[in-house]
Image (cartoon, helix red, strand yellow):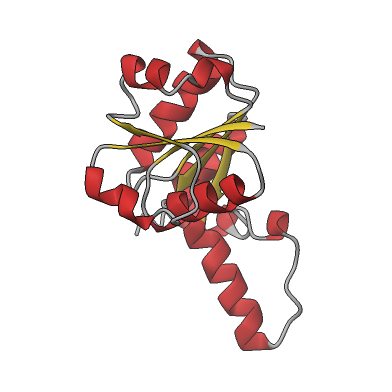
Length: 156
């Protein structure tokens, strides 16, 4: 599988290193050259220095030939914009965006964009751990319980 990852922080570098070890063709994009230090010594993929919402950068990363595109930067807006570009302009079959804001994650999921809201997943896992519950499937934590948050107007 050919995967392009935007963001070489903790999450992006972990995904890139793991998938590279599994034999996938991995390209990772980041604006900060120091970020690539997070990659494992055995990372065999391609590193692209650039802005992941810049069309030329995405072309250099050959996103048009990717089977999947993952956006893991610290910016919800950048992640959403980049996955939309990958999906619409470059026809990447599978795109996933990491989103921090539960309200945004819920809204984009309703629009058919695959999102992982680390806030919701982390909170759900911690709740289950505190209560001694068995962990559920990932889908159980994606935007779970958001209806009440959105209805209450909690924008924290």
